[in-house]
Length: 392
Image (tube, rainbow, N blue to C red; front, side):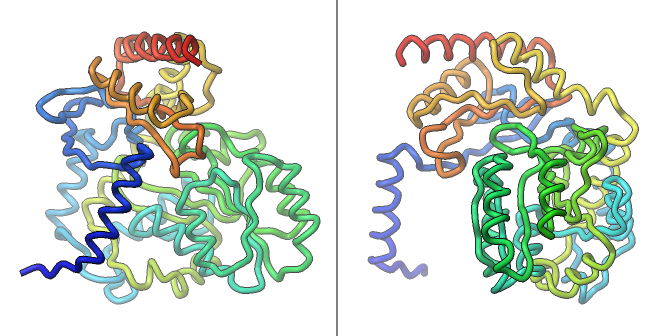
């Protein structure tokens, strides 16, 4: 029999009521992926425009078969932490492949991208160190910074002058410093100014961590945000995930061999977490084969994003992520519901995921969307924006 604490129940109910009142409560809904970017929910089929499966590889037969083959050979689970069991050869092969893709000496694979960011800063920084983090960086970057116990300073989004000011006034007071940023920002789709940021890092002896979760596979010939620039802007710490364009699950850090060796010993989310299951690793390896060999597939998500923005009258995008800012939580929820009535799944993004007053539709584009999907969605979004403008 479950034992319920009355005070706990009251606390949870009060919190939920407050979130409901502010239109910030989240609810999980059962959804099942089907063909392409279609998803089934409550007996209806929708075109999914909020998935991070940018290349449509999560349901690719080649990726699925690789996952099945890995499971048949190595089992459903890995059994323990890698420092206990060592791990099978596919895991080491995946690390070699990711290092090659990112142009680094070494790589460590973690259980997820969130775990990777919880691991990196605490393993490299501590009391007496400084972290400078973009205010719009992903939540797990901020969480990792907090766990490091270093002094944290947020700089305004992509504001190099503000970053320079913080480095100039504070860097000398700390032993080590780290700059932390997304490569492509998950909610806005814009790039961090990596060449200028890395120049500042060199000038002030700061280490730079770039979260490339939304860049690998779709920009820089699939290599990510560092390869987007000419010449390439390569940070010493390149973190990313296997769960977006690669269609699998897991996270990684690509860095020098020395840094990776240190994290293999000191990164708690690696030391104390069971290793990835073989299926995820086999799927990621197959996805990397496709990313490296299929340029048209890599380029298609951005091409479709540009088609959508041209039809709606939005600025030309630089990534497959397009935000449609609506301001209030109510407007975002209403727009999401209206698009769902038209057959499109586009989730409303609200605080604290984005800053207050910037609730939005976050529309993501996949290689498996059709031009007809794009044009029909654009028509619906254009009407929503026209009505929003008229009532503003």
